[in-house]
Amino acid sequence: MLFGPGRLAELPAELDRLGAGCALVLSTPGQSALAERAAALLGARAAGVLAGAVMHVPVECAAAARHAARRIGADSVVAIGGGSTTGLAKAVALDAGLPIVAVPTTYAGSEMTPIWGLTEGGVKKTGRDARVLPRTVIYDPELSLELPLATTLASTMNAIAHGAEGLYAHDGNPIVALMAEEGIRASAVALVALAADPHDLAARGDALYGAWLCGSVLGAVAMGLHHKLCHTLGGSFDLPHAEVHTVVLPHALAYNAPAAAAAMARIARALGASDAARGVFDLAARLGAPASLRALGMPAAGLDRAADLAVLTPYPNPRPLERAGLRALLQRAYDGSPPAP
Ligand code: NAD
Image (cartoon, protein in one colour):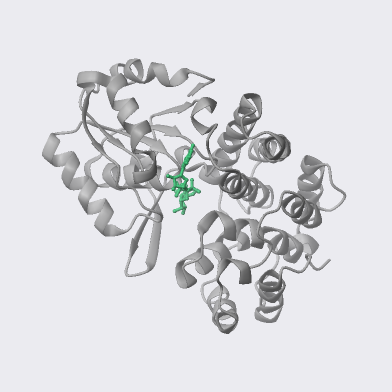
């Protein structure tokens, strides 16, 4: 794990350390210039650039990246970008066992998890496999200076959501709880500073630090209601991933609050708020985040189906999953109402 401004320069040395000399460099189309910069740094260690990462790793993209890796005889993958790019690198690693060097430029935290995802015909499958956990991660805050504020906000809320659910995970432990609380605190402080000045390098560093901690929590313990709801809403109604997290989190926390008092107290403390759900809601509102599922394009007619899907497959959650309660939660999220106490 390398952390600090300018550390991208150590990418070639990190590949050497892994014994790799033929890397496939991945990015989204929007970050191709950064991928080319990384490839130039790597010189002969870079065998090709594929700027084809797309949200939720469609199987067609995964096939193209796997094919490119085979064609050039890649012995490693460099993922430079957000969760979509790391996700594409994971698809290659899952297939070919190649080591990943991740250079995150958002706060999604995928670089700290062994979780992969692949989307086929609109259905996203996820799983855990140690082969997809990046071997090296370079957190260089200079690379996220230009991340647009709206994406910064949504992505940081995504990190806060990992930390929040880690605090009431059925398989949690005191170390994970420490990381979660500190990750939420650092993320929230960074968000407020970045809303005032998106080019604040120290705040970009704090946001990456928060993302690192919260991503580690996501990788270590099972997520509950909030992540399952977001997965269902994103997958079934094609809503934007990180923004859905922002809208749903206060409501999921309010739903779970009666069954997870200690976790809620720590989330509230990390946010400097008196109530966890309200603290997240107020933070997002203060920074101008989208407040409702309606604003994200959710059809009102889909709320009943979303509630049905939410109770279809049981999973551990502090409060039992009750359809009527979840339908009410979804309605509040749809309307953008404050979380119900
Ligand atoms: P993303 O990777 O899709 O990036 C969003 C947009 O921001 C893209 O257009 C990208 O090109 C652009 N971008 C990224 N960094 C930038 C920068 N520094 N400057 C300017 N533009 C930049 O979004 P994300 O929120 O990072 O990732 C979302 C995806 O990651 C989802 O598919 C989600 O399911 C997945 N995810 C997976 C895990 C895991 O553990 N497997 C964890 C979190 C998220």
